[in-house]
Image: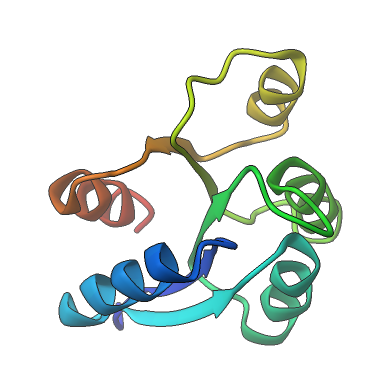
Length: 120
């Protein structure tokens, strides 16, 4: 398999840039988006192997973008990234709809690599 293509979605530009750098250093192909709407558009254009998506974002939040992407691409592998503990109905619904995982920020590179390797 070629290097996995990752769509990284976060409205925090510092986090986005730092994580993009870290992923590129690991030889992953990285596409970035700053909100849910952009994420949906870039998903359609690039068909990434995995999506790392923040939950709290302007325009469309992570949940809204998740359900929109999943509607058209049922096999999409989406992982939520969040600095907050999550335990609500929306999260449960996302899990039932095939959420691939959850990474708590700041996440560790080994944890991320393990997750990415599990998609193959």
